[in-house]
Image 1 (cartoon, helix red, strand yellow):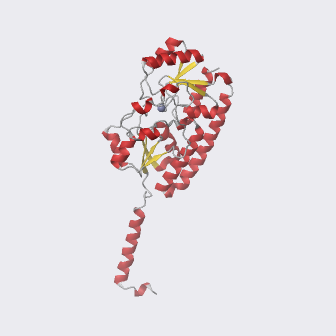
Image 2 (tube, helix red, strand yellow):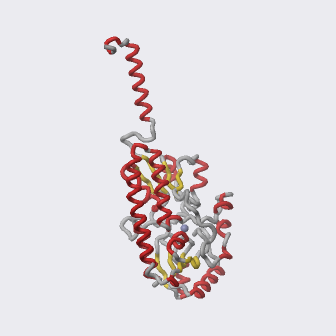
Image 3 (cartoon, helix red, strand yellow):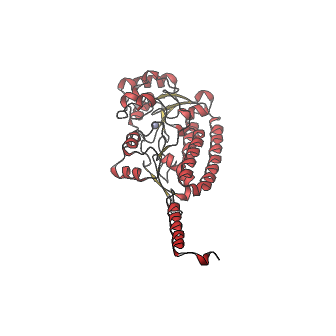
Length: 327
Ligand SMILES: [Zn+2]
């Protein structure tokens, strides 16, 4: 009865209102048919983001497999993908030295999510015998300005402990859900399933490490990146061939000689070399000292067809190498 007596002007009003409502719906972060444009920095961050985001995101991983995250510099095309992204997932904790100036110059503060936020960071050159080298990292890392004074000694390699990646999962899930609330339940379900796998992985690592004699649980690496892993599973990092957190730092001849002495004194069984640095220096030290050299995955996953194409396989691969090398 009411409709029969609607004046044309009232019908126009209703039409206008419905157009406004539809327009309002379309201005929410993601329309139903679209997926979020996501950028991750490293392959490791990208693997976890893809696992949580599933089909609802379109992911670009900035660093190719094998790229050292400490040394990466984006080209103009990669810079454009960063600026265009809905969200940028970074490890944070100072790992991506290239990112901080870009955030400032492109006003990306709201887009960048540091997945390590909330983790209790290790500080200082952790568990090393090379304490005299502390502080060199901040001298060598140029271009970061005053940030170095506050954060230069934080160990950024949070992912080496799967328990820290539980925090990553929460941070990623919260950010994706906030940007695309319509798929929050899917993100949550993916997160819960993956957390179960991470807890199983942690248990598996404990069982593997238990087979290594206690006195052999010493890790010598190319740079100090297994601090969180060492803390979680009862290893000691007894030295690094480049004695700092970042591969940007160069080892001097006297530092190499000092490390060779330290390796010989410590009777190290093995040196573990990352997939992201030139192994020549490590090979020289291996030859000088007669200590066996093993390759592990450090700041990057392998190629998709390689030995460690996912984070879960990355941890399993490295753990298997430690178990083999340290018996
Ligand atoms: Zn590193």
